[in-house]
Amino acid sequence: MKAQNNTFVISTSFNPWFNLALEEFLLDNVTPNEVILYLWQNKNTVVIGRNQNPWQECKINKMSDEGVKLARRLSGGGAVYHDLGNLNFTFIIRKELYDLKKQLTVILKAVNSFGLKAKFSGRNDLLLKGKKFSGNAYYFEDEAAYHHGTILINSDLSKLSEYLQPSKEKIISKGIDSVKSRVINLHSVKREITVDKVKLSIFNCFEQLYGKTANFHKFTENMATDHLLGATFAPIYKKYSSWSWTYGESPAFDVSYEQRFSWGEIQIG
Image (cartoon, rainbow, N blue to C red; front, side, top):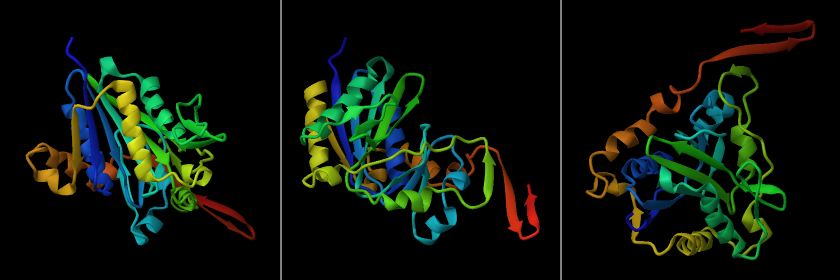
């Protein structure tokens, strides 16, 4: 069996469509015995799960008015708000090396290196003081898989209710509702914690658990047409930035409008 090949990847882009496209590109190109750890951030973005309905999960009009992007990922799970106070990580790996506990241990050790007492929850989330700071989701193909998650470091938590609450209209959907959980920023517990410090700690803990990193890549959006990615990246990016993927992939749903008057209630649906 070949020696394990560890790769560490960072995106400098804050564009969710680019970052999710790069995630899928890395999944398509992960080699046998390779473990890729990919760190990325999105700016002012709501990311919905593969089987979710954006009209049910998000305030679409408010997001549009305030310049908040909407993106759909390959994995399941609930809707999440990303800003630059949040760090995303992805483990991309062949199935024979996939080890969820080991992968989450990298993140847990990195956070606890700051003197915190974070722990696993039964739902594969990571908790601090009983509140969630990291939620995780998963995607599997025939030979490869990825596990990704968020790390709330200094995120604007007020935006969660601003953009993720359903609209007033009653929407009955076959999609998967977001799980409403209490959340916490790491910075609120220990002021010295920053995104850059967490990135460095994750890299160090990745090497502690997986061994020395053989490859390090930093990707910018300009590299979308670079030889490092090649022509195969363009159609992936086009998919993630398209209306048909973000909205058209929504599960079938029915909308009912309800209005209450002094003499009673009328419902159209």
